[in-house]
Image 1 (cartoon, rainbow, N blue to C red):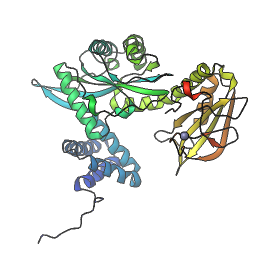
Image 2: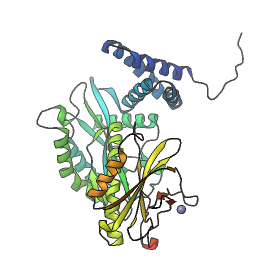
Image 3: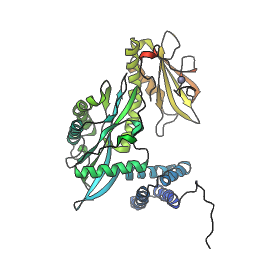
Length: 391
Ligand SMILES: [Zn+2]
């Protein structure tokens, strides 16, 4: 007899439950052979979920494992990222490996940092330099004709996977992917921010992806050096009025993480440079105040900047904790080193736990001052200055 069941939106679907089970089996497997057995099962179910746009199943199983089984959570997260950013496409009787890549660019400006459509000639040049210095000789490359801000990157696993497939097809056809820009959210202005050049490569199945996979002469470091040297002049017209630093193109998720890590010291240095030009005073006239901000746990460090002669905070930077970092990570030491390298002589570090607070009126984060209070950062003459909020 068919029974009516009370359905709950929170109930795990059978696929979500199975994803969790397979991830635990994978995490707990001993030898490589058993691992690859479970990997294949898990990859198959993730692919099915992506094809069915079952984003909720992926997230539900990740959420459940986050609370119950850290190793299985990480195994599932790794496998989802891998299935989302790569696949094998048959094309004209041959199999091709497709990889979604991301070439991040760190930038800062007293004015706004552009994001937007990339002209065809620039796109062609970028493709030439990526092909020559970053990707293998056999890689066919397709780029999106758009410079993304963080708010505009694909939001979900399914969206990212779809982009990978579209770009993979474009790479096999030697096309550019034209983005429907109407649906993209507006970019929030920050003093320092990241921009992303997205694309995909297609290589014959099982062959080299990157330059440094092909020969001992090229390393990741030397490839980055060449990309910075040759690629930067192509990027320059896209980022008028900005200082910028190109990072190495890599698999999509790895490149996003590299950019998140690199953007923290970059923002800090950018802030000191910004304050020197804006206030017209050298770095040694500034004081930096560092404090840890806690919600349920330590969420981030906030660094307030002000003149040494009074207790005003004129600017602030957030240093978010990433990955497994926590209060035992020596973030303060790293922040102090960067500040001293930037010319700041007076640094105050507060031991107290600051509350994870934002301004009630405008939502801006509050920063610590020398007295150990949290305050709004206010530049002396806001009329003539750009947004003072930083990532
Ligand atoms: Zn405010």
